[in-house]
Length: 99
Image (tube, rainbow, N blue to C red):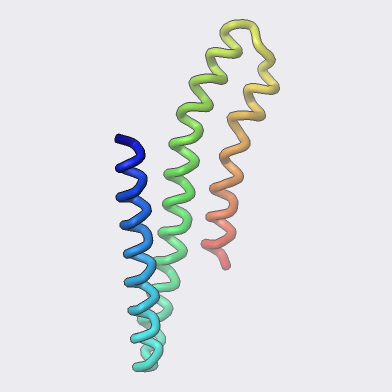
């Protein structure tokens, strides 16, 4: 079930990217700079949003495992490290947002 869902998500993202690129090329031919700027902002927002969704999905599973590990007497520092690692994905999205 998840494999089919991921295929559909990948296909949707590829179709969206192709549509946006084609629209930007068309907009550049007409020399409509406001449309090009609008697509830049939309692309940056999509990048940041998808990074946030991916981080949330990964942290939900990692956080549950980290809480279980700490409850059984595990190392809190290691659990915190594993929980913080996926947040670097959002930092990459934030970098793309500002560039």
